[in-house]
Image (cartoon, rainbow, N blue to C red):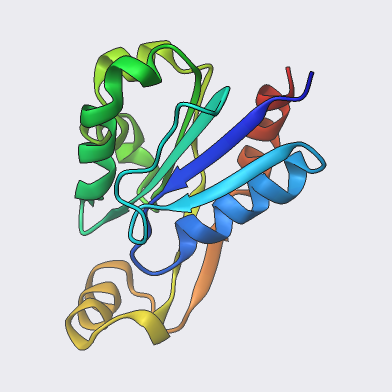
Length: 160
């Protein structure tokens, strides 16, 4: 029997969507559907065996739409296999970011939790974001720091 998987995510500059698509591609030929919460805030998760939830940390905060989705669907999420990931560039703050992003009961229920790294997408940032990234991180041009090794490990745990 093939598992039916939903990868439900929210993204600010597109990195979380890139990671979600990587996970989807690696799971093929399994049935995997991508659901961007920006386009579908209340997806019906009843038909899925497994749910992967992904979010980005932007300016130190998790995507509000992901928090609302998790809160609203908590009873049903706890009846399914759950994987959680964050796109975040501050590795030192990963544990705290994860704690802020997802409720403890959901983190404890998850079969895997991963930090997927992130990207500086200067072309998608507004002036203030570019200024802050240059000032705080010293980054002046776009760069990808996606952790493909963590994506591969996450997909391996999904296949178990």
